Length: 201
Image (tube, rainbow, N blue to C red; front, side):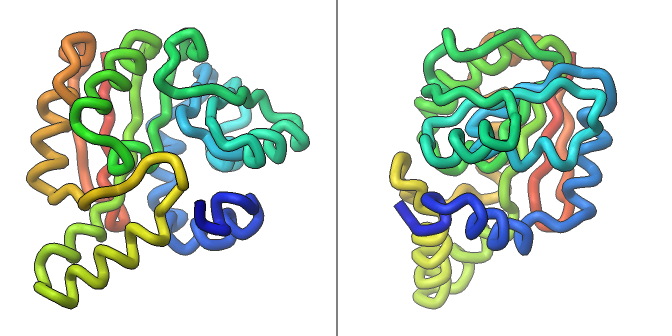
């Protein structure tokens, strides 16, 4: 596990360079107001700073240090496995920020079957689009891809490769092969070099 995943303040500093204000503003708009929000793989609850205060916020994550840090700030966070459906609660909006690229296609179907089951209105997925430069540049691209993987190593799920834009778009259109997800309409766009995907009922 990289140092940034052991120290919330270091993580917060580093991640601030990846998530520009424009992207966070778009996520906030999509969440809206007066909606219960469940943040899956929430870390220490960083997203709670950006969504409107009228939204009851909760989160689940397996990182003990991050959960303790968030709880010390008064956030409703729970130490839990995101693949355990008993850890979830029905919520208007479920956030999935930088989760997809850590998992295989098989695990994504398993996870999104759970996520879609507990989302009353929306599932919001955010994934990096800038990583797809890695496959384009031969040896240099391999080095770039290796660096991205090392920096994003959470010590739990090993990143074997970066999804291309086409692979992402196929997964979005197919609702991650989740039958439960087929009940949701999907839209997606690129915002500040990130995929912003909205599944809505």
